[in-house]
Each structure stands twice: as C-alpha cells, then as structure tokens.
Figure 1 (spheres, protein in one colour):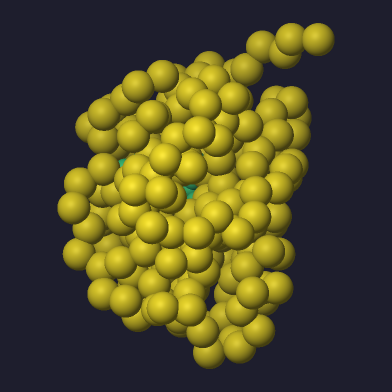
Figure 2 (cartoon, rainbow, N blue to C red; figure 1 turned 180 degrees about the vertical axis):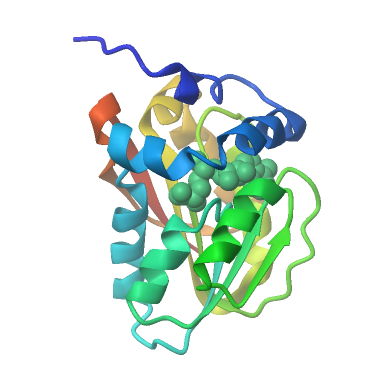
Length: 206
Ligand SMILES: C[S@@+](CC[C@H](N)C(=O)[O-])C[C@H]1O[C@@H](n2cnc3c(N)ncnc32)[C@H](O)[C@@H]1O
C-alpha cells in the first residue's frame, strides 16, 4: 500500500542546493522537534546512537555530530554519558536550537556540499537525518573521513525512500572505491515510522 508522505518532508526530496536547505531549516527550526518526533515518529537518532555506543565504549571519546540540527542526537549522546561532542550544521537557526540544549562542546556552521576543514581528531562521526535524495551525498559523505582518527568510525543514516529512489547502494560502493573507505555494515532501521518510511544505518571505516 502506498502512503502519502507529508509535504514538510517531500519539500526536501529531489535535487536541492545548500541555499534551498538553509531556507527550509530556517523556517522549520521552531517546530522541527515537534513535527519530527511527535508527528512523524522519527527514530533515526535512537538507532544511530545505540549503534555508536556499541563502537565507542569510552565516555571520553570525541564525537562530531554532522548535520546536528536542533541537537536531538547530541542530547541522546549526552544522556548516554558522552561529554565531548561537537556539532556542525548548515543552518544557523537549527544550530541556535542545539546551543540551547547545553550538551555540545562547540557548534559551528559548515556545509558538507562545500570543502570542510576537518582535523583527524574524532573517535566517531555521526550523521543522522542528513542523507536522502541527493546523488552527490554518497560522495560528500567521504569528506567526513578527514575528521576521523585512523581507527575511528563513521555512523550515518539514509532515508529509505532516498536510498531506493537514487540507488544509494551503488553510489555508496562507487564512493567507497573512489575514496578508499570501508563499508562495514548496512542495516535496516526504523526511521520515520508514522510516515511509513524506514531507513538505512551505515557503519563506515577509513
Ligand atoms: C533532518 S535534519 C537532521 C538533524 C539532526 N541530525 C536530527 O537527526 O534531528 C537535517 C539537518 O541537516 C542539515 N543539512 C542539510 N544539508 C546540509 C549540508 N550540506 N551541510 C551541513 N548540514 C546540512 C540541515 O540544516 C538540518 O539541520
């Protein structure tokens, strides 16, 4: 059975520029948490953080939350006991919400579609809810490895609709081959359960 996806989600699908996303999230920052968590049944942060915890046993680990948004992921990491969490995002309005939680060491603007100035200081990078329908994203994702220590882990989610519609599987393999990273695991996760959209959870290594 086909379910109609809410227009607050579909406006992000199809090819979009960073300016398009900045505009969407400027307008969404105030109601994002309510819409995602309470209306759409957003479960990707829980799934990704549960996975990260199995890879990062030391609470002293340094973590980058890429596309941190309003800080749903940072909050879960903080609740789990991690204390060194940096956040990056495209949207100043979303970053302001994240800042209000008081769980991040630093928060800065950054655009994954542009050059990122990352130093290899993180034990893990987590990127939740950012990847969906952009064919450039499996290749942009590879830029995050610059921020990982040699034995670090990159954990990312992909919207399941985007996964199928743009052929993420093949694009990710191509990106891994080109950039020399390893795909350790790809699993199914609950994503936007009340919108009947599942997700993929990626565990990637340098
Ligand atoms: C669906 S929200 C997910 C936020 C948060 N990770 C969560 O799970 O609630 C997507 C976030 O990705 C950010 N984003 C989109 N494209 C980006 C890009 N090219 N670089 C950095 N952040 C981006 C948006 O500003 C937005 O905050």
